[in-house]
Every structure is written in structure tokens, then in C-alpha cells.
Length: 412
Image 1 (cartoon, helix red, strand yellow):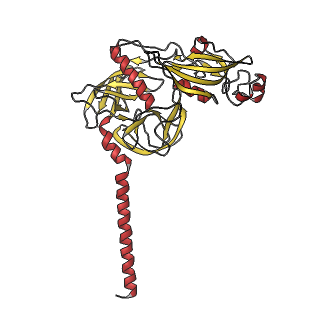
Image 2 (cartoon, one colour; image 1 turned 120 degrees about the vertical axis):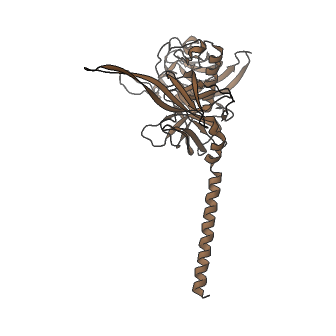
Image 3 (cartoon, one colour; image 1 turned 135 degrees about the vertical axis):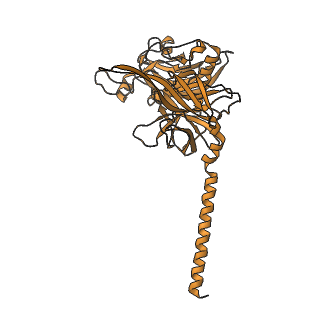
């Protein structure tokens, strides 16, 4: 063998080795790709939902006639309990004529509407089966207001399974693009909303978002208009809280409502000036006029208005008070035991205060440090139920709710 032939032979061997390594790396990457393992674990826990409703129409003219037809939209749900409770998006299901659920194995089941909460976008339906269903696994823990922590992070791999475009069992994967405080489609500010790049289409409404362990961390809420593959998922701690309350109300036939925490204040900063039509800010000149002490110069929330029949008004908060600091206590409604939920902290922004309110539990008490007429004092306010809160429930539960009033979105 000549030197040239030997050189060619060695190059071929080297290329063969590189090609084998590439194939091996590809196979290894596929075997470690989270979507494959997650789908095997969760496929039987995700369902497709046909939302069928009767649509009435008429034709005008010499040959006028009326007609009816069945209109179908698609969405996704996930099995919440073994006995047939399914959680999904609240849109469309309340006035459906027929709800049809498709399991992963092709089984077709008719579902009953249980209840929904429009503000949080959570709906619950129920199917009857001879064999128990396989419920999803939900990530443990919930949002920690002290550490400002929830157990997922930017860059984590995630998988969504849904009824994409009416095609059930569709899998998409991606990463958590960001974790941010974000207003849901009803303008409620929530912490640790998951922004992801997973592809979401019509029919994915209500689809769960899974982490690499196959545990639900969120449910699809909306896709940002004009931004390709930018989707948002409501954190699962809120989804399960609302779902549990809807199921309890349904099973007990009680006249309770899903908990919507409310303080009843409108901050000065960010509100619109009626005379100028612009957003107002708390500037240095206003702080000097209010004679704010040095230690509070860079903190605090100035209250523009307090709703007349609100917890804030009931416990003594007034228009133009400035909230400087807060300690949050939680009182067990059954035992009366009191614990510190959020230790003393200065309030640095309106958003920080609003997040505390929107994540408050029934029984939370806010101990505020207030500046009024150049004097500092403490004020204790128990968070209450939003007077405009309502819940749609199945007629079989024996209770129906309608909104008491429409609240301004500037108040929280």
C-alpha cells in the first residue's frame, strides 16, 4: 500500500468514527429528551374536549326560514381526580349543549359541567367511568411570598400536551422563557406566571404544562398577540386552589364563592389624571409636601381613592393615606391561631402591594404602617372577598351566582 492509499484509508476510518459518534450522540440526545419520557407518563391524563352548542339562525327574504346547526370548538383538559373531575379553561364550557371528552385511548365520554371561575379562567367538568382515571401529578409546594420563590426556573425544559387545532394528543416542547408578574386575560396581577416558547394553537386552551418529571406546573391562559410562540401559563398553585373550591361548592351545594381577595384601593401612581389625561406619579415635590420621613423617602404607596364598601374603608384606610410598610398575619378561621405569613417589610412599589393582595388567603390580616397628615400610625385590615366575585355552577348543585357589580380595574 502506497503512502497516498494509506492516507486515504486513514481518512475514511476517521470519517466513519466521526459519523458513528454523531449517530451515538443523536440517539443519546433523543433518549434524554424530556418530551419522550414525559409523554409516556402523562398521555393518559390529558383529554381532548369537544364543546358542542346549538346555533340558531334565520334567512330573510321571500323564502325566509329558520335553521339550527351544531357548532363545535375544541379545547384541552387534564384529569384532576380518579373519579372523573377534569380541569380545563373556563371559556366556552358554561353554555355548551354537549361536552364530549376524548381519552387518550379513544374512549368517548359525555361530560357534565361542574363550575367555572371566569376571573381566573378555570373550569371544571366531570365524566363517569367504570374504571378510575389517571390524574396528573402536580408539582409540590406553592408560591412563597417570603422568599419570592416557586419551584421552577427560567430555562427549564417543559412539555405541553393538547388538542392542537382539533388534533388530540399533540405534543409540543420548549423551555421556560421567563418567569414574571403578569396580568392574566382578566387583568388580575399574578406572580410567577410562566412565559414559554412552546407552540400553542386553537384547541390548546386549558392544556397543562409539564416539567421534566411529568408534573404539572401551569395551565395555558393566553398567547400574546403578534408574538410567535410566546405563550403564558397560569401557575398551578392557583389552578388547583380554584379547582378545589369549585369541586367543594359543587359537591356540598353550598352558597360559597371562589375566593377573590380584595383590599379595595386605587393607588395614585399609575392612575389617570382626570384633568390632564396622563398617568400620575409620586414625585419628589409631592413627597416634600407630604413631609415624608427620610427613612421612607424611597418607599411607600400613595392611595388615590378607597372604595366605599371595601375592607380598606371598613378598617379605617382613607383617600390620600400613604402605606409605607406591612406585616402580613394569617389567622386560621377554625382554630383562631395566628402566624406571621410575611414579616415586616417596607413597600417599594404598587406592584409589590398588589401581588400581596392578589395572593392573599382567606384569613389574612395586613398590618400597615400609614402616613396621614404628617403622622405615622399602624392600621390593621383583614382582606375580604371581592364584591364583584361570582361563580358559575352546574344547576344540579342547587346554586347559581351572578355578579353583584362591575368593579373598576384600577382597584385591587
